[in-house]
Image (cartoon, rainbow, N blue to C red; front, side, top):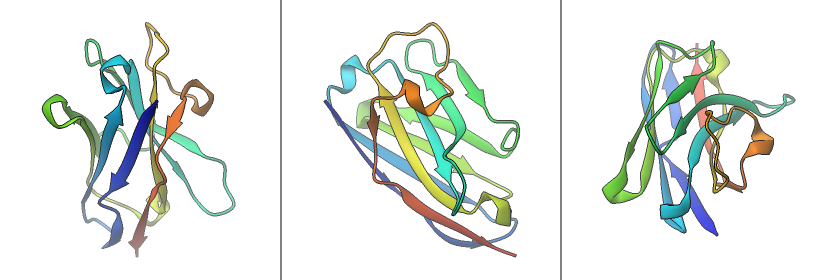
Length: 126
């Protein structure tokens, strides 16, 4: 089992920045991939960015490339999402996810993850 807890969401003006954190506990040493997803009201959950924990390979959704950066602190078992140049369309609940399943690729679909955090709200005002 892996427990995930997100933090760092909030209200920010367009063009601003936020950094989300995802603290992991449990079988973190067995985790093979982690990622961030988001879900806006009335929309499906969508992939934002993923990372393979072995090797550090990343994959970003086109909509956030160049603006968002995923990183991790292994000593703290924490995953981060630095979000810059935020726009109103980035408004959503952001979820952290993890999987113990081995994969040679970055996991970009929600069904590929086994564990999810409770989500943190990000609201960008225009």
